[in-house]
Amino acid sequence: MTSYTDEHVIEAAAFLKPYLSITPQIAILAGSGLGGVVDEIEDSIRIRYRDIPHFPVSSVKGHAGEVVAGNISGKHLFVLSGRVHYYEGYGFKTIVFPIKTMASLGVKTLIVTNAAGGINYTFSPGDMVAITGHMDLMREISLSPSGQPQGPEKVYDPKLIDQANHAAEAVGVTLKTGIYAAVSGPSYETAAEIRALRIMGADMVGMSTVPEVNAANRLGMKVLGFSFITNLATGMSRNPLSHQEVIETSGRILPVFSVLVKRIVNKL
Image (cartoon, rainbow, N blue to C red; front, side):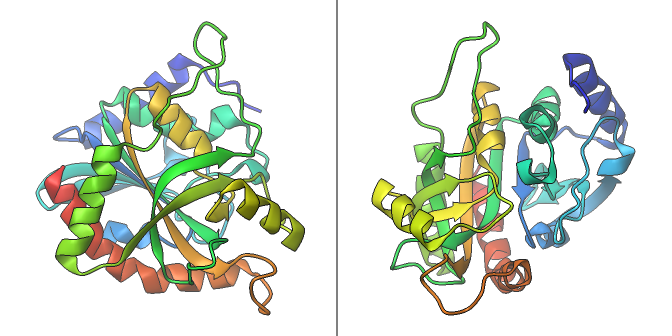
């Protein structure tokens, strides 16, 4: 397993710089089935993860594995189309490597998305949820450079959440809010675990996002997070859970999210 260093980050950033006429300050990390947001980018340049020095490549369906640079609503940005996960066998330093590379290039704002199972009884497949907080059940230990535990008080920027709500109202999109619980996977949660998570205060559950968000905060980025409810969690539906359902539901949500993200980016 690669032991990532600051030199690796510098090498990845140096590889990407020649492709950029203007260095974006905004990045979007697109989760399962949501990489199609890259179709909204104008004057786009696509670079495969496998071609970027040290970049990890996902093995999960619905993750294209490419960096797309261009502009939306006149704002220059990156889209990270796909991510790697802890359950794929990657360590946390590997998972957050793309975020560290984006920070090295000057990205100040990260919009992160994920597909999630609904725990809140008021949530339904197809709902978009602005993440207001998370529960880190992946056992990731966040350390400062001095080796001391460290964690921000407000992980998801309140002002960006307000902007997202205003943007949703403007384009006629219903945007809910909730707490995201991150688990290690790859197995879907049991009904007993879902009941416990609900008691703890979680509204949705997934297997990603928290490592990247924690890293972004430590690197000084402002973060806006979205969960897309692609299925009801175990014990809340008679239908068996499947990754195919996640991909199909994400595909139905994508056009609505594309409208919303254009509005949000325009106001950043």
